[in-house]
Amino acid sequence: METPDGAVVGRHDGLMYYTLGQRKGLGIGGRGSAWYVAGKDMRRNVLKVVQGHDHPALLKRSLMAAELSWVAGQSPKPSETLSAKTRYRQRDAACHIAELSTDTCAVEFAAPQWAITPGQSFVAYAGDVCVGGESSQSEESFLALLLQPSLFHSLARGRWMVSLNDCRFSSFSSSLAKLV
Image (cartoon, rainbow, N blue to C red):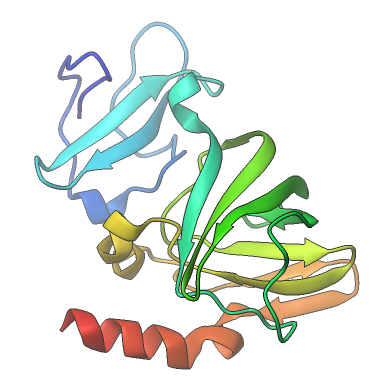
């Protein structure tokens, strides 16, 4: 484990056992604020950690989404104001689609979001209606998606319940086949 400055502060048990924003189970302590996982360097097998819940390395204003599933039947317009969740039980966050192609989109948030994590779902809403989403949030870390313990989960918002497992299984299976 190392800090953004390159200081080694501990050892990890395998990158697949950690998620961005994780605080517990790191095995490092000491003075100051709590330690959080801020990133993974897969090439170097390094877990990046920072101190403090509000460290800038934990905040992101955008994400790349791939393998999209627009359950509303069509993709939103790039100028359309949406709200989205990138974490379970997260409050809605205002956003818009900055770029859109047939299989990817860039999402920009009005305010920085905490610990946007590859493998966790990005779910977009137009008002109270789920318009769609995806679950890999980074082109370079699709493998990290496969290593996440909670690959798919249900998201509830008011009376609407969407299971990404139901909407995305066939798309995910075809993506997995491309990796093998």
